[in-house]
Structure formats: structure tokens, C-alpha cells
Image (cartoon, rainbow, N blue to C red; front, top):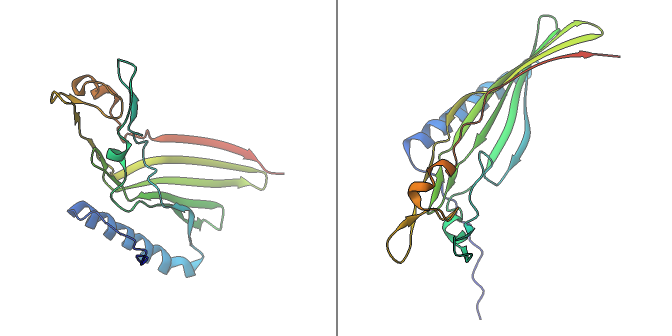
Length: 195
């Protein structure tokens, strides 16, 4: 028996939004990387090959008659998943202020019943050293987001009734349980004593 060569299918979402996201990422990488020689830094803190922007359905649910159904094949990814988290940092005012722009990119998720557009989110982080022993930090996380829209599609049973394959609920009753991409903006203020 002849063994087939291993093939890796790389599917990128081909809509106009993807082109915009990719252009923004290129701009960030080129702009920040070119400025890295001037004591600024572009640092990647995390990267991976899975979808992380929101949760997603497993496709396994228990119906009202206590029967367990496995529709996980309808939630299997059809696109290439990846994400990275990074930040740009620079020092200001004689190195007393550390200014950072953290950002996260996620390539989105495509399956038969659940899809999420690629997303790019930004934050701002400012650390100010008042003196040699006191540091004040302020952060705004996820204050700006581009993309990340989520859409879900229903399943149909043998009577052509629509239902949600993630929860087992009737489609009209499942609207409140649909996944949304509405991460709240977080504000942080912190004072630290340095010893």
C-alpha cells in the first residue's frame, strides 16, 4: 500500500475584512519593528494555533428527552487558526514613563455552524515612576477592537425544525445563549512601592 504524502491545507478567509486586518498587522510590524533600533521594543508575549477570541460550542448536547447528541463535526474548524499577543513599548520623559500598547490578533474561526471574523484589539498601558520608591500604573485593556463579528447557523431535525446544535434548544429560544464578542473594556489603576 502506497503511503500518501502529508498535506497541510492552509485556508485564509478571503473577504475584504481579512485584507484590511492583514494590512493593519503589516503596518504595525513594519512601523514598530523599524523603530526598534531607537530603544523602543516590539515584544511578542504569546502565540499559538488555536482560536482564542471567544468560546465556541463543542456540539455535544443533551436533548429534552435525555438523549445525548454529538454534532461536533459541524463545529470543526475549516480555516487555519492562529493568534498572537504582543506589545509595543517605549520610554518617555527621561525614562520615568513607560508607555505600552498591547494588542491581540486572532485569525477567527470558520465552521459549518459557527463563524467568527478575524479580530484585532488594542489597549494602552502607562507606568509613571514618581520617585525611586513609588510607581503608578494605569491601563485600559481592549479599548479598541476591529472585527471579530460572530454568526451562528441553526441545525434542522427530521421535521425541518430549526434548533441550536450547541445547546439543543429551539433556534428561536436559543438567541440569549448565542456567543458574542463583547469583551468589556477594563480600566486599572495601581500604585506600587519599590524596595
